[in-house]
Length: 518
Image (cartoon, rainbow, N blue to C red; front, top):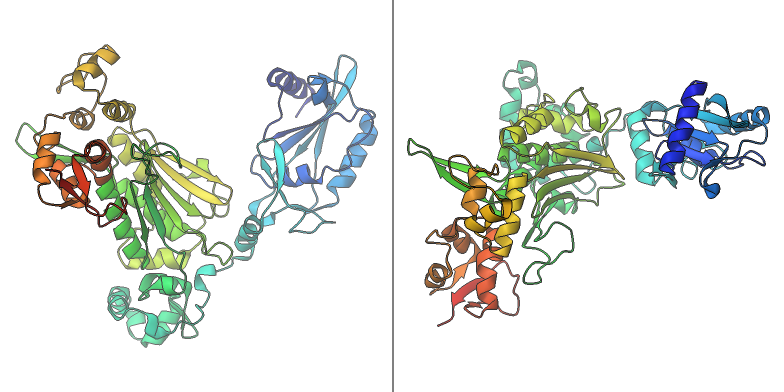
C-alpha cells in the first residue's frame, strides 16, 4: 500500500463508518495497543489477510485522531508480530491527514500449510483466532484440526473401525467390488483378497477401515450412528416456520446405510417431495420437468457424501438435506479442504480430503472423479432456468443451495393464497398464455396453478377418499409432490372436517391415512 492508497482507505472507512472482515481500527493516540494477537492471528488465517489502521477513533465518529508516535508504534507492533507462530511480517504505510499521522499495518495471509497462526504464549489451541465479520473469535478444535489434517496429511478415512471385523462387510457388496476392481487391473487379479483389500484401503492390517465400512459394510451406522443424512421438508422459507396446520416438518427421514444406499434413498426423498410438471409436446410426447434438475441434486448429495469431514472430531454430525419452500440446501460437516476456496470451485483442481472413498466410488461406477461435478451443477441449473447455484464454506460447514426461479416463487406464493391465473395476470399487469407467458413463467409454474384438473378439486379428492388413503396414494392421485399435496389440498379438507385422520392421536405419523367424512 502506498500513501495515497492509505488516504483513500481512510476516506472509505469514514464514509461507511464501520470495520470489516479485513479492516481493524485502533486509535493509538496515547500508546500502542497491547493485545493485537487476536487480530494478527485472524488476519493471518484468512485468505484475504487484513489491514490494521492506527489513528482513527471509532468513538469519535471515526475521526482521524493521529497516533502518539509513528516510529515507536511500528516497533511495538513488530514486537507483537514476533510473538506469533509463525511470525507475522507486517507491512507498514504512513500518511498525513490534516496534520495528523495515520499508520497502517498490512497483515499477509499465511499459506494453508502454515496455518493456524497463533499467539505463542497461549499455544495453538487457545491462541488461534478466526475473523467473523468485524470480530476476532477463538478457533474451535475442529477448525484447528482441519489445518493440521491438511498439513500432516491425516487419513481419517483409513482409520481402523473398532469392534468391526471382515465379517461386517456385505458379502454381496464385497463380491461386486472385487469384480469391478479387477476389470482392467490384471496385477490386482493375481493377489489374494485380503492383500487387495489392504492395498485399496478397505482394510488395514485385516480390520475394516472407515472407508471400507461406509462402502462395503452390512450396516455402517452400527459403528457410526451419525454418519448418515437427515432429510427434511420444511413448510416455509426458514427453519422453525410452521405450516398451515402448525407442522414444523412436511416430511422428514433419517437416511442411513452405505454411501451408495444413502445416495439412492436421498434421491428418492427428493423425487417424492418436489413438484414435477408434465407438458405435452406438439408431437404428443410427455415431458416431465422437476422443480430442480435431479442430476444436479445428485451431484450435490454425492459431493457431500464423498468430501465431508470424516474425522473423529465431527463424526457425530450428519449431512443435512433440506427442502424449503423456495430452495433446496445440502450441508455437510467440514468446510472446503486445503487451498480450495469458494471462488475457485469448478475452476481449479482441488485437494481431495478422502481420496480412497472418491476412488472407490469411481470403481463402483457412482462418480466420475474428474472434478466435473460443480460445473455440471452450474450448467444444469442454467438450462433449467434456475438461478446459479450458491456455495458457502464457513463455521466448519460447506453448504450448497439451489433456488427456485422468480416465476416459480411467485407461483408458489400465489398458489398458497389461492390466486388463479386471471388474478396472476392482473397482479403482474401482464397477459398469460401457454405459448409466450407474459411474465416469463415456465410451463411448470403455469401448470402448477391449473386447479381445474379433475384430480385437484376437493370433490374429486373426497370421492377418492371414500376408502382410507395414504399420503403416497393421495400424492399420486393429485399428481404433485407429497409435501405440496398435503399442504395445498389435503390439510385444508382436514381442518374443515371433511377428511378424518386414521390415526388422530399422531397427525404426523408416516402411516397416517385419510378418509372422507360421510
